[in-house]
Length: 417
Image 1 (cartoon, rainbow, N blue to C red):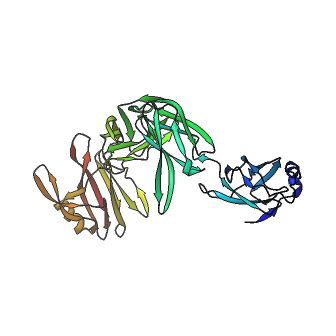
Image 2: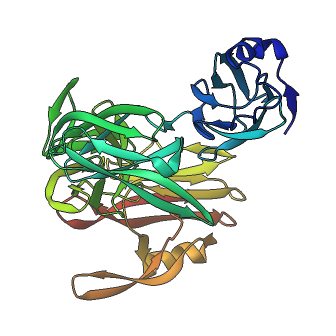
Image 3: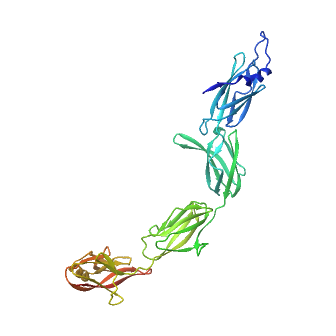
């Protein structure tokens, strides 16, 4: 510890207060009324010289400032290198004219501080307030109105480091103060306990926020739902195969969660979403998400010369005519539906005999019957037109109408010449 000799003029006043004794008189007893002071940065405290022979000298440290007035020495803490709860001791040595010594230990602490300006929680909840600095061994805490909440000091260990925190337990809704002291400084912060309200779910309906019990979301869209009530920690129950639900985030006094239909859904249907208070399943709200999946149309298109064409020269409303010249590649792309595309065995064999690829033998079941068919897994058939032929093929697909699954078909004329 680097020390400096206190400027002697500081103690000129002191010498006048202690008259010189005759040489044959015994030196008076030299002592101080205090030998230890606890200070936070910026605080001052004093001790008094008792007896001894003036003048006096005092070593001074850069972390403190000493001033003298009569027999009283006042010490002010200027700074500390101590971390958090540790004190930084400064030992000062005071000497009188006879060379007798007295030591004063100055314990300098960081100013008392915690990690928040207020505590806000719900009835029955607990919250921890971290103590950042102060004279921790003398720490005391109390709630002004214990009908609203109680508080106590608790310890937490992170590895080998022991931390002190204030544990607040909410009892009844209302506002009060959390007071704490380290024996040197006393401070207080706001303590707000809120009542837990029933959970409700809200959404924007025609530009207005309304409480809902059902909500329609189209496939490919995402909407934000507002959760009101509860205590901010929620459990969400829903079919994860049908809905994609984001994290619940706080927004002003409410909470928001984003909901979207799963991209796997191929039919319109209702999906339940339940929001419950964590730890209290009785406080909950449930809504029905009405997922709107537009009906898909079973159609065909084909590639010719590297471009996609949708045939327009149809024989009837239910027919397409696909034309190609010998040597060209014809690609039939089936679109729409929500299940397998397939053709009957005989039709599939005709396509294969004429150079088609993309068909796989398999089975399709309707009711209790299974049928052997050629499945089209990718929905695409390629035909290398090596010879002239003309066939009319009925393609089938499973279409989901929402209330039942039906088999629908489309006839395609293939004309190679």
